Image (tube, rainbow, N blue to C red):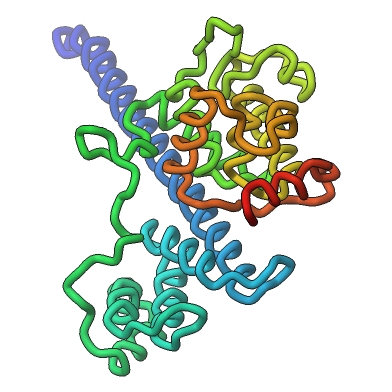
Length: 308
């Protein structure tokens, strides 16, 4: 009996350690599950935002009707696995709704949605036949690094943090997450501590004047820096009425330089920057909120100079 009692504290300690270990495993599993749910929610919100933007251009709701842009946006959503976007793009191809009718492409997108249980797509498959063997161009990763990887995909924990913040904050400012990520990629390559020789700071490389203009007091804080950069992009989008090339040029060289040269300034750095943003973002125009600011007084002359 005495020997057995002597073993009791040891058994209790072992039991406590085992219990703590089980608690730790459960906590880690719970944290991982919560993180996965949060990421899934962010992805779902992103798909919904893209689909809503596509709908506005497909039907001309508050913006000029633009079926080609709607198709591009639906394809962005389709690439992210949104069955509603896949169905909508299939429907546009099946009916020639503002784009050239193409049953093979319609079948491709219907089949993607049908595999996810989308009932309308399953019904539509019988009318358009079999999908073509070629993957539509818009479904291929277009922006690749030298090693063939998409440069706007998070690859490290730090980049995943930045991507998560962008997807959370960009919709608040009416800015496409992809445009914000393109700017961050070009400016800092996702480094929150980046500092240029011109004292541009943080993820979106805000100079002190821009930080002051948009109430950024901690430019190396990722969220503050992002909010300042997104506020500036929102302002530039309204000022240049959604012209992405002018917005990119102004972000790099200042809106004064764009006005002065009536377009993209003839600086090699700025022209290279604009080309890079355009190749990353892949769209010429971006929705904007006209209430943010009055447009540039030079816009009519800029458009004449651009031949548009």
